[in-house]
Structures are given as structure tokens and as C-alpha cells.
Image (cartoon, rainbow, N blue to C red; front, side, top):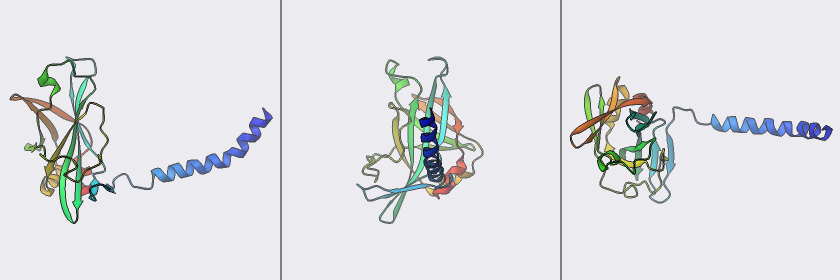
Length: 193
């Protein structure tokens, strides 16, 4: 036991230094700053908004505490000075939908509704790589998450950043399923502009 006490005393300064380094690394980038990186394959500079908007829809008919989610992250892709803005969207669920009817497992048309204004999220026909996103700028929230990349513009981002009420609607065969804002605020978009 005396040997353990001596070892603990010798390791204490190392543990203190490691704690300071870890905490310093966490604080190196303020939480409101956008993340920027160079996509090494496409040579595009990708700027990712510091926060996401996550919308949720309760699914009690499928399981207790079951929810479907839509996670939306704005990003800017700069290819040689030409900026393109996108919503990087994941549609996912807390439940496995492989055994459900096709219309419940498939992703329908998604639109945002901000202060009463409808903003359709129309998927780009280009592949992520063609858009300058050879590597994923945002990790999927689940293995079964489906990706949608929708072009947007500065005016839409500015409008969303000021909106006081935002929700999402997913259309399946003429029926709209409403998703309420689960986390995030439109203000997190401002760091991207």
C-alpha cells in the first residue's frame, strides 16, 4: 500500500497537466463558432454551422418513447471562391423500420415551416462528392439515418435565424406528418453567414 501511495503522488502532477490539456482543448474553439475544414479530395473549404436544428415526432403507436427525427445542419461549400449553401439533413428514428410498410420506412418530401412560411427542402440531384463533400461534414446520428442534401440561399438562412417558430413537415402521399423543434435555434445559423 505504501508503494501505491508513492506511485499516486508521482502521477498526480501528470494527471493535473493532462486535465489542463484536455480542458484547454475543449475550450480552444468557442461553442458559437462555425467549424471549417478543407475537403482533401474535392479541395473545397467546408464551413459547418455550429449547431443543428433537430425536429422530432412522437411515435407511440410503434413503441414506448419511439420518435422519428429530422436533423438539419446548414453548411457552406467554397470551391475556388464560389460559395454554395446547403442544408445537410438526416432523417432517422429511434426504432428499426425494416419491417414496417414502405410508406413509413421511406423518406417523403420535407419542408420547414418558419413563422408560417413554407420552405421546401428539395434534394440535390448531385452526389455529395459532386457537391464538394467527399467526406461527410456531419456524422450520421444512427446507422439507418437517410441523408438529404438540399441547396439553400443566404436569404433563407437569414430568415430562419430570425424566426420565432419553426417546425418541419414530412409529406407521404399527400399526408403531412409534423415534427416539432426538439433542439437548437435559428440563431445558430448566424455563425455561418
